[in-house]
Image 1 (cartoon, one colour):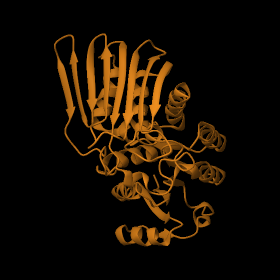
Image 2 (cartoon, helix red, strand yellow):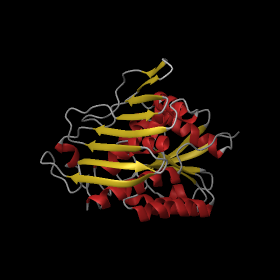
Image 3 (cartoon, helix red, strand yellow):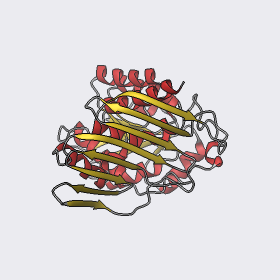
Image 4 (tube, helix red, strand yellow):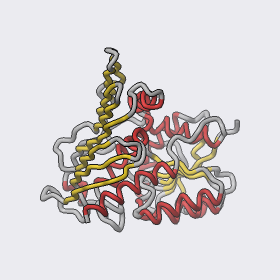
Length: 332
């Protein structure tokens, strides 16, 4: 198979992890261009990575030799960029969230489907070894039928994080802790337990932060398959704790905490996968390795080649977006 030719659009906080992942996958993909509207970011990126930088976005969309784009810009810009990529026949790998509103998120999925291009979403926690192991426990019925499914996201972000222009606003990010941080764990929870139904919630902005959107959420809900659960999410929990998912089944219980899975079954057996690694829940949100990004990009490449099933689709991301919207609406 010929190498996939990809371009990066946006050279902000997450660009380094993606660049390192792409370079690791050099036998499968060639990153032929990296764009930022900011000269300083282009120069800083070029000093660190052997990837050509361009100052004109049209150079990417007008190049028929570029097969796919990796969009890493602020959420408010995603629809317009995805629309241009789809119109140019380029596959799309899009940083979460899809966009700042459910309507714009749904429109992105729609334009990709109409153009018949792949749409993958950067929800890289799906590729944690412990998360994959828990997925297998659920799929094989090892836990039995789920009766409880809950998640806890207790991150820490200092005020300086929100002092960056536009961060934590509806106009730039679309929301606060739910859409920006918790979406990763919400996506995982829903992949295990299915669609939530009845929802009750409280949404707050604490005195810890000066910001427009929420930094503290508590919700309870049931799932269509019968389980019940809770969600706690915040960026106010100093110094940041591992994200946690707890699944209670009729045959056992499993806890995914950061990079570690521990499960105990009623037949007396136990399982443990993973270990203690940095996971970005503290003041530095990128304080973790790029291995998950590498696995996600590899899966995206494989799906384009018809060798793998795309693991995180636009519809998967929409499921998380709709859940978040229901939590916020119920609180209002």
